[in-house]
Length: 452
Image 1: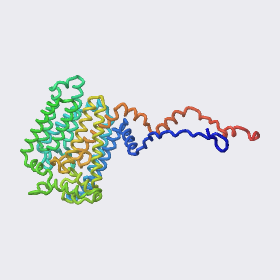
Image 2: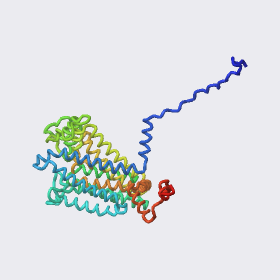
Image 3: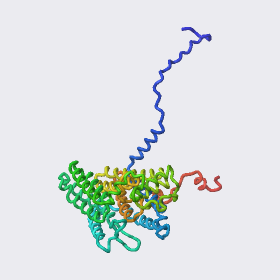
Image 4: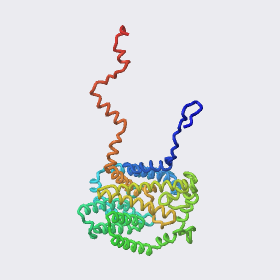
């Protein structure tokens, strides 16, 4: 070994290790996705989505009702806030119903099923009695309650079918009767067709479509065979075609699909001006209250076509926000129905989710020109107390079902308010003497002044 100039042996350097694969860098997008997925899988996600989503839709709907109804109210020689005040009163009453429904146990919900069904049928029969029923826009589906207030019993029929159908299917599942097709269809389908007949007597096909969607949702959740499901669907489709072909008004609405001009006799005026309102909104809209179409151009601007006014004033951002809120509400309802072991909760949550989702799709599809105008309001958003009250009660059902999940119940029990813990600690320590802390200051104050 050659020596160095100093006579010391040369220092041998350790051989370099081959460079191994570097650890992957932390991708911020992947990290954000992981956090979002963990938050999405938490037990209280469905609870917060239902509560927060429904409240946001209702509040935004109140704002848009006030904006879209001012001109209509002034044209009727009414105060500009007339429709807003009625909708706000309905929202307050609906909030109380939602709170009550969210605190009720499932047994009480099931006990309300039969009284609500009988009451809805009785009110639907009263609608057809001359002198009691009131016709609005050619459909006799209203009852005058007194003064400016009117009631539409068919809206409560949706809630009644959900509760009664869920209770019926749950009892039959407990007895293992749903494997027989006659027990799956009878008496659910006959009662649903009776409600459909009472609704169609007044000419309201939009509400009948929603009721049919609820029926098919319940049959789907009950596990109806494909042939049975297809047979009921074929019967309903045949009846729908007959009802459309025998009504010139419904045929005219069907002919307005994809229309870009009002057409002869302005038969497609409402559909076309709804598209005009959406097209003029742009990305962020013309501003809240700055709609042009609500100045007498677009009929029913604060009811069936409030989504078009939302697109004109809030733009694409506003309409996508509304769609995102309804999508979150629908996902939360499906999650509640899929994670429960109680058959009544599964059927009721699935029925409510089908109801709200189908009604939102039909309303928005009609405004976009993709579906015929069915005359159904946008849930929680359009003007109409008769539609808002049962819908908010149904939202309360979903909240109650989300709270009954064992994991969600444990998570809510752990989230006691801080001031409650502090007050509990104060109450718990009230009977004990104050703790003496062993500090230098306390020891020094215990001595006499001569010992310092």
